[in-house]
Length: 214
Image (cartoon, rainbow, N blue to C red; front, side):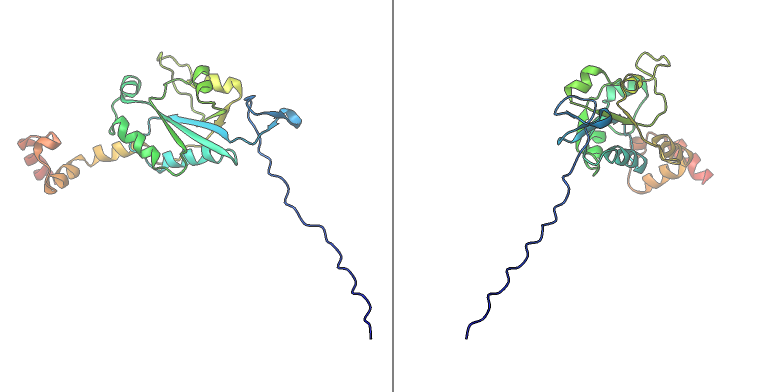
C-alpha cells in the first residue's frame, strides 16, 4: 500500500531584534544626520569629567557614575589636575598627584585617566581628545584668573555640558574637617600605633597637653 505524501511544514518568519542605534554628539566625526538635528553613529560618546579628586570618596564616584551613564555608550575620560596647578589655584592637597591619578584608575566608571589636566577646558583640549561632552555639577567654578568667570562657560555655550549632581554630606573638605575636629584623638591613636612625634609634627609638650585633655 502507498501513503499520501506528507504536507510540507510552513516556514515561519524569524523574529529579528531591531538594530541598535546610538546617538551622536555635536561632533561631526562619524556622524550621519538624523531627525531633529541629532546624528546616529556607531562610535562611543566621549564624555569628559575633571577635578582634583583628593581623598577620593563615594561622592566623587557617584558623580563619575552619572557622567558614565549620561549616554548608553559613553566612554568616560577623567582629567585630574597636577599638584602644581592645584596648590596654586585651590590649595594644598592631602594626596599627591600620582596617588590621585591611581585612585581614579581604580574607579569602575572610569575608562581613561588624563593626568596633568588643564584648569580651564579649551577648544584645543576638546579637539585633542575628541571630547563630545563635559560632565560636571552646575556650580560656577572660578577660572585661573581668579575672577568670577566660570571655567565651564565655554562648553556650556557650545551645548556640550552635561550636569551631574553633587552628593550632599560628603566632600574632601568635610573629611578634612572631621580630622581637624578630632585632631587630638588621631594624634594619640597614631602614637600608639608606632608613629613618632616627628612623624606627626608634634612636640613632647603638645603630647603631654593632649594626654591631660583626653
